[in-house]
Length: 534
Image (tube, rainbow, N blue to C red):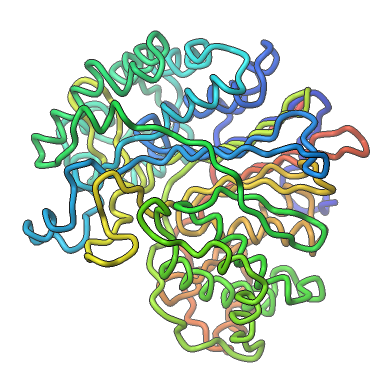
């Protein structure tokens, strides 16, 4: 229970449905869908489509999508199943490491057309809707179409992110025309409209996934990328498919945590939790030196494993059993010294700041949807074809251009992927539908939220609000909520300290309290987080 003398938001509670997103308009949309007879998957899709309009730097139909879905009544002890959906896009069939090296490209730039993998979100939404939805996809897209056509007010956080990316958005003429207002980023409180974006959403609403992957939309995107020197083809778009997967899992205390298997890095969350399970975190200050030191060291070790082992299993041998084995966690945990930071454990790539949206919805029947959608970096590649208003993701810069590397770019290969929805079960039944944003930070953020709840007894909102740090690129990047004396203590242990320029993404969670029949929802105020229940 939070201290009422301190500022902060309360947990949203209700009995009939709950939704948590990083934007109020998306959360309201989700609840509207629930009240109109839609279920959790319908609400999540509608909310995400709205976020692609009102929070375009973070997500959109030009990006990718992953989902964990637990149908009402799921109990894995009785044969019930949680479903996973991998909606990540592939590299174009014509893209090879040799082609890039001949162009003297040894690392794919963030705004290169070669960084654009085939967007997987729309096909993923379509598959999810067809298998588990109650309302037609076209109906679910109507709120997003309305906001794109009629306009919506820019919130303060969205305005801040837009302003930070002004130069990136001005670099492409189409992007500048569609995504700037009078040649500048829109300001908080101004109304912004996206007519081209609305036309594409209408095409998808009318024709389903084919409205995006075939016809004039795909033709416009492919021609534009080809004119920039890329190798994309209409075949690449027409054959893009999301696919169903069985979640992978581990136990932390009395909780079973589920993730999407590689090519995503959900397995690294599970590895981190396996390492942390060997410590009694509950005896430490949740925002103290010891807790952050242990978490930072586990991060460094787990991310070394990420860089060594995680890739598209269709192209590489990913040792899932090894990464999830108690013996491997024991081996890594044995390298952690509580009295000092370890020497650099090995190459750990990535940077802290990415953009993504995570959405959690639970409906009155008990269906639970853990849903994440992303453009990767803010505004993705910042490349937009002339007719579509679709910001294209830059997920391809996650590939290596090193022949022989397990994550080396290859035709129709999926890159190592940072977006990871999560779900936790108690006694075989869904207990927590949750996720965080922030690119590579996500395994750390998920571990932080879960251990906040399990070890420190925090509610969903407290667990999300609790200050965070991320050991990345050799430094412990601390959010402002971490006290100076704690940072000095970490420095004394040998950690190099840096204050994070921006918060490490955000997060949403819905807890299913089966004893009282209540849904408890929390969201991250460091974004424009909004959790509602009724």
